[in-house]
Length: 451
Ligand SMILES: *Cc1c(COP(=O)(O)O)cnc(C)c1O
Image (cartoon, rainbow, N blue to C red; front, side, top):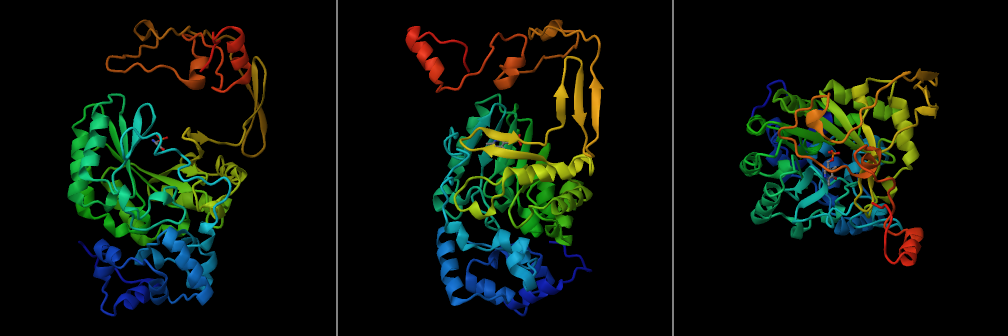
């Protein structure tokens, strides 16, 4: 592992490092194995290393919380907590247990996204036609208190075996429509280099897998894991994309930025997925700063997630209006590529639903009235003549000249289907529709147009 000669401890790093052992060197600190070996997993160690202390009563409530949802914080991430005002600290809130996690609210669910129900084989969630989520590791270097997969954290039943991974790879192999594989977990970078290398090699052997994505919070909570050796291995398997998970501008430290630099220099396009969290980043100014800093470090903001309905997250949730307000404060006000897509992951497994402020004010047959970010209202005059081409999906004859040699023809689904010329369906009807049920009864089971 290379250690920059100029590298010195920051004051808070030095204090934690010396509390671990007075012999701790900068080299130890920057070694991810040292960070993992010294991860903070109980309240007493947290107190000893940070100097923050809790009352007896708080101890009891905290112990109870971590017996349900375990804790693990890297010394590196703990060193980012500002001790003076720790109770309002965004780093503290994301990493340190809060007894409010034990309050299960009426809307909470164990698996709100139905990731387990939409799973054809253990570890794979196949929700969208052309891509899958593949959970390859259940370990994380830090247990985020807002984790949507909180139910799996620290549970040995969820550790994927090599056999299980092979079954996942086989599932992908046998489904030629899967062109994008999203490795997640847990954190894929918690796997040893050689093991991850093996998974990537196996996936690369599958001709229809066009891109592989990795979702990892390591650049944020354990940046030293991004070693030269790791990026050299990843580079062999291009195209590899990586989405990381910064939630607050204070997480973009020198160490984190160095990790991002290594990944970007290896030609890996970087994206970021934030979660909107009450008391952490539910502020337009914080989000603007975060997204601008990400772009400055070659990370493209990808998604801003509405907090899921998983158990133990109720104290982190904001109304959806807060997210719309944040997006309103970004679009037009800053670079387009510094604006993430705000999404609500549909409870029940419907996937991600983008949510935006409204920009269309009104509409007639030849004019659209729009407003911009400043509140200026404008009219777009539509073309006097536009020759629509009737699309019968006969692409070979089409003047747009799409060469479809290797394209797999996919059926139109959802609203796309209602818009399509080649499909006669006029409506989509929910499965449990009382009117249609009556119709079925009256017409002896014959059904009208439906999804
Ligand atoms: C988020 C997600 C994906 C990837 O979705 P994109 O919008 O392509 O980033 C794939 N599968 C599952 C189950 C997901 O939750």
